[in-house]
Length: 116
Length: 113
Image 1: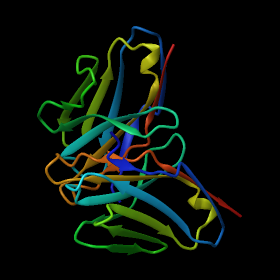
Image 2 (image 1 turned 90 degrees about the vertical axis):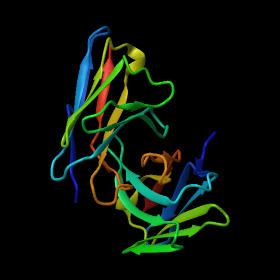
Image 3 (image 1 turned 135 degrees about the horizontal axis):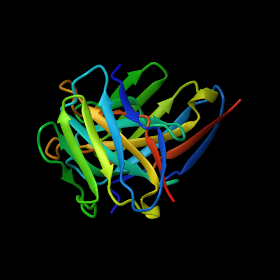
């Protein structure tokens, strides 16, 4: 099956620093990648949708200057949390769709971000 | 406004019995529905999907039923196994929305040995 990896799997940082999370599709070309965050005992919240080579589309209420998304290639998308604050602590998950069944998303294992 | 609703936050089933997880939706434009399984601190794993042109899709122990008139779908797991214990998310999409998935809040399934 299609494999999506994320790096790092967990990160702890100080308030005010920036953190970059990578999402890679390992065995397929991801035309579209999605970034989600999940708070404890809540559903997945879509943050943004990115298509390779174009600007990401952010969901309402998500600050695009705070959550920078780059989808520079068909196998890599990055999410940078700039000037992180404790309220940004969450579980961030990426997913990707290929050129096959584009409704089926393949998820990465997630990244646990803790901002002190 | 929750467009995809999973009204049961949790479900407990005995091993070997059937697990039935329910999902309701409000948007009649949804034409594709998916079920994902999620363990704590991991990303969701795709389980099974169904297109709105079908009313049933089966894959091994997993069957999804779709009732479009009732805007309701259900996931049946038969027989249930302890390894099935996880949170199950229902998601829906429509062709005109950039493949964006709309998620339910999930149902936590516990299969007891």
